[in-house]
Image 1 (tube, rainbow, N blue to C red):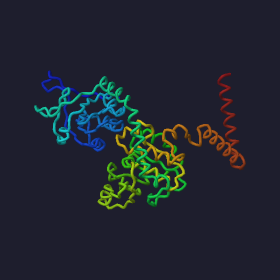
Image 2: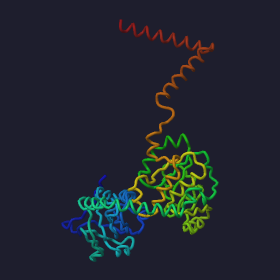
Image 3: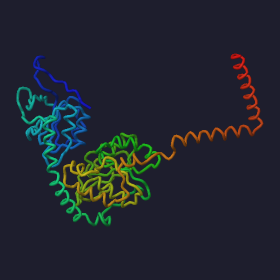
Image 4: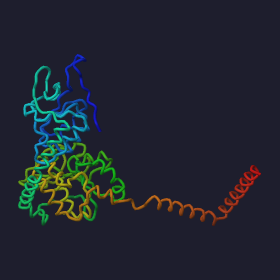
Length: 393
């Protein structure tokens, strides 16, 4: 969906380009929470990924200024393509100085130059469809190198976490009962909103344990449900979700440091600490598997190699191995939506109603009062039929 950006022309007596207040943050996922339509988003995001780009597009900024390179060539990340296709100007490689800008400062993007009033604060490269296409072609040629690095990271993770992966050593006890139940793990990732919508019949029928991974807890609440468990480093989940009554599991570093635990304590809440390498979605899957979940349905998690690389950090190798560890219990949400159908189909529902009406008719006919009603109805029907016949004869 293209977004129309209002541009000012010199003939109107104003400066050319697009203007708006600055919104600055090194973490794109934090910035999108406070970004408003017409703002100029200033980010420092090397290899802009799909999820971040879709969040930016949803906020409808006037422009995006990236201090880093949006496509480094490591792999074909699709974030810049999404921004350009939406009609949002993207200034690339603007330099680290732009991150010193303050929120609310008026900015103007004119071509490759970023201005604050009459002062040019940065110059970069404007990415358009042609330049993005050329960079993506170059990135695809270097994908084999990234696969090799991915394999090396995978072996390193096996070395560090073999006891956790193979024997479940280190998984903390929790109070939420998962044994023998379905678990739905929600990550605020690829197409999570659409997947949650298609899974409504499944959630209604099976009532799985709802596990939100950081911001995935807010996604569960936005969909009209309440999370049973919230797992993560607690940096992108709202206070409201944390106070929803869900059991909290803080993902800590392997050495036991848990920065997210301080936030939980400030809110006056209790939490279980789970030290582990890898990502929070790995921790959620390992926790569900070790606690005896019968089936694990994943929403918004990473499935393909490009999606693993799109996270932009080496730890994604752990997600690959975690999926192997969980094995046949794990089902991607898209597979569930394609394979699952409600147990009562429309035809069966109609047949059920018809059988019910026949049973009701038989019950009425078996009583003296019911027989009297049927005789009255039959007499009225004969009168109506005689009147219709008389009209046409």
